[in-house]
Image (cartoon, rainbow over all chains, first blue to last red; front, top):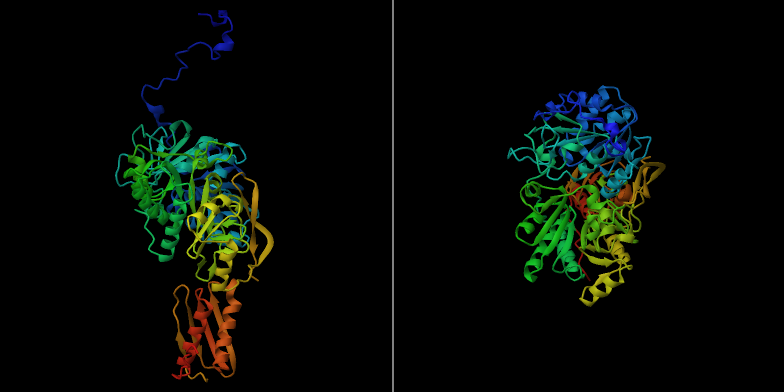
Length: 505
Length: 97
């Protein structure tokens, strides 16, 4: 057959004639496991990682993660310098990064949050380039839009088959390490130039349903341990017994019940703080009493949400991050508990992201100011000790955002004149619930009218601030230097605030 | 009130302060460490000094470890430590008039 005699052939079939000697024929060999490598070093070499590139990690192993330190140590040994580390978040266990920063291996960090010694030192001026803090939705959108280009993603996975189908749980072994959803890692796998999966369980093909599909994976490195199971997740998220938090939770549930957002078929997200988790318990009682059920629950998922799903009170669970083993097991076993990625969850440039379908979200806060701005990133001493997470994403997406916090923590007031760091702007914060009063943003006159008509005694946010100050006294302002050590981005990746170096002189 | 021996009051629990008082030749020296040093260090020292002054203590060495105690707690712990250090049980319990 002479192809060139077929009219328009080069426009309709571009690759020439079949040639048996060149054809790809695998005959069930699974590519002879060509993606499987024997060491992290081999993977780094094969990805072509060079000075100045950007690498990424996920934080689904939380404070039990071994991947970041393991990979960075190997990169340092190979003499690669000037890297940007774009992690979905960092925890206390990542203190060894300090040495890599000092030695020039890491030039810049992007993350949702930071804790422990690394955060202490960054707050004291460790890095020349300010750290960029993004929300989970902001990061996902930045990756998709190319503002944050990832050269190589190193993603830990509790199971992976020889082709690269990776997952946050393991169907073959009951007692294997698990993290549940790989939601934030899914975005990296989709957009990074090269994707390396590090796993402690190579399982037979096909490892489906998968969190990360094989078609997005370049290399697989089996390692002894991906993390410390105890640090990755607890068995079950415990209910708070703190009476203050229980009172806040009960009040928040009452506000929600009368807010107009509590109807048959509603949707919700609960933050991970003690009071916001406890709110779910009080809501459950009301749902059972009034025969109301939720259409879906979103977000970081805990055992409490799973129990409500299994009791028929919540139809569907959309899970970007599983907080405990009950949640991870539910993702594995419950058909309508779905693993979603960070962009599906909260990507701002995507009108269809899940947070925009929320009726309400219950969030915690380190500080709230009289403009309703919320800080979840820096402590009362100005040191970085938290993470943005999905705070601004959900507050902006949900019909009603409820922030729950004690009025004071020890001697530290929570409601203040001006937060140290604006993470979520007052423009998207609707209700503040403390154990000593409720304040509704004056922007939400509709909520004020509704709650007042239901008999709630509301305070102004200024009244709450005064109550706090009366108890603990007026704190002296924290002293900062001019130097900026962190840049905080809102979910659209515009700069909403900066973090300055603390002045300890 | 004269400080006779070393004594202390309080705990290192959250929202408490432990105040240790020792005899000194002259003057009141306060060594404070606090979890809220930046924001409330000056205020805590002021309350300790005022409380000792009200009790007529003019010579003492005070070491205090604060875990975010409120002013009323700081005052109560300082008073208790001072009475113990002065070996005095002559408390002036206040009653509402």
